[in-house]
Image (tube, one colour):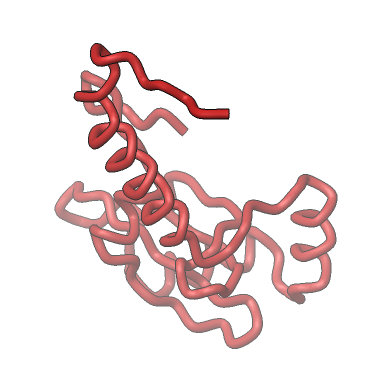
Length: 126
């Protein structure tokens, strides 16, 4: 059976194909899948580090004050604690605490941008 595409839809074909390719490319940038609540609980319990210990490590490393923290991936396939710190200059910085080593590393701006979409007034929409 031969299908005929209406003339009015022909200009939309390149746009539709481009959107599909872009969507596939974006989907391929994720390094790890989201965890279910049960998987997250199991991973946190198996990590050997509590949220309080991670916050303390980040505060000790930076000299700042933790504003928020949670279990996140570091975009390289490792899961751990991401801690947002208010530093002495009142700037917010995000730090990743690796529960297996205790290492505290700064999350670069581009890594952090992927995790937080901002609304029209600059607030996070997580």
